[in-house]
Image (cartoon, rainbow, N blue to C red; front, side):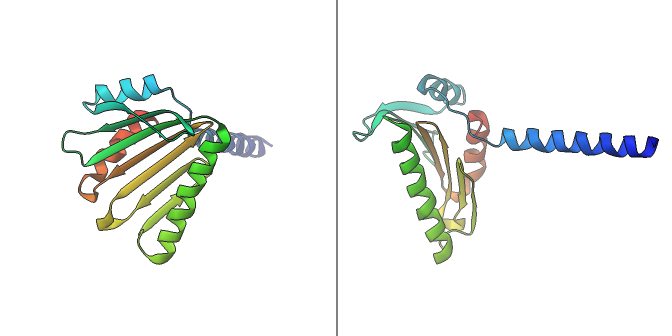
Length: 152
């Protein structure tokens, strides 16, 4: 009986850990101010830009040698942001089939594409926000670090 209780406890703990890990992988929406302040603390240059008519707020950030660039887009609607994200997802999947992207990982809120010599890209989506991180392959570690800073 004690063995069964210990086994059940271990199963429950494992299930809780796995559920917490799954929750942590979902992208959380951030404000333009959060995006700006987090990247400025990491010495990125951050500038507001003009987006398309579907975009309410558009910001671009880049490191000193411009080998890593990030864009923050706050869309006029959740539907417009989802459409934008889905476009990137379809494009990445097609590029993977063509062999342009070596490694591709996709979920309902994040795309990570490693194109080898062609670069490294992460696209994250939450509600009405899309963030895109692009890097030359020589600086993919800096792009990964920027993603960690942003929590994506």
